Image (spheres, one colour):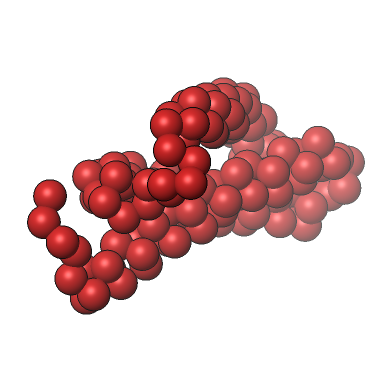
Length: 139
């Protein structure tokens, strides 16, 4: 591959930085939801339920955005990896390190997706219970 221009280098650097930030935010959004769902008490009343629904919707939007950013930004990151990020001091030991990193990240994302689907069921129950409460309050 030809030499990377300074302008392209800055674009690649920013892409890689935001790719890493998106990965961290994806894991953080799952963690926020994990702790919130585990502490949620339906006896907390309507306000507690509405807050949980609002938090769930916000974290879901952020997680979806981050997930797709990771996929899209991963393409140029992969393409320019050897020219831009390859650390000569580490040489070929980078390969097992990158494999381990990706196994850990895929495990975190897989766990997040699995638990997110479980939480979606619980969120549907909370929505039904709020709809029932709203229906009873109206009558």
